Amino acid sequence: MIGAVIADDHGVVREGIRRLLEAEDDIEVFSEASDGREVLEAVAKHQPQVVILDITMPKLGGLETLQRLRTAHPGVKVILLSVHSDPPHIQSAVSLGADGYVLKNGRVSELVSAVRAVTKGGSYFSPLVAKEIVEQLRAPERASAEPFSVLSSREREVLQLIAEGLSAKEIASELGISTKTVEAHRTSVMRKLGARKATELVRYALRHGLIEP
Image (cartoon, rainbow, N blue to C red):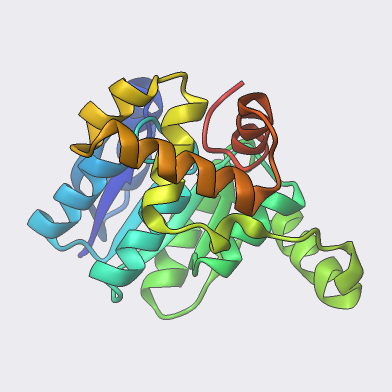
């Protein structure tokens, strides 16, 4: 049996994915999660072979969760699930080591195919995503600069919470750090991303799927 953890901040979507996967004789859903932190806990507890991960989730988004899974659980296969097929999202997913990238508006059967492909040691990218990857390989100049990987894990976490509208005090409470440390991370993030004001951080977070419009 292929053990899976599914993560999406919408309960209806999670239920749909669970029913789709468990209709297959060789797939079992071990656990569900609504944000990245729950994903990390579920993977540590259940040790699944594959995680199906929505890119846009609160508190800890899919990309940062992917990065942490790669460090803590390198053997777990990760399939990103997204509505986005644009270069920034795809570049981030590939650079952080996603095993698959499935579009939410694709065929229902794609997700099952992706699960089987990655657990057999392969990869799976929806046709539109695969086309974009090929285009970037053919014309590297098309690929925009990808500063996301320049940020530290904590900086990415702070960036997401800023974009979600939390104050420095609220972020400090959420992460268990001081307000002064939050401000230092914020300053570093703005410098690395070339942002001059908070609204530019929000736009960056939107482009990279850290938050929903």
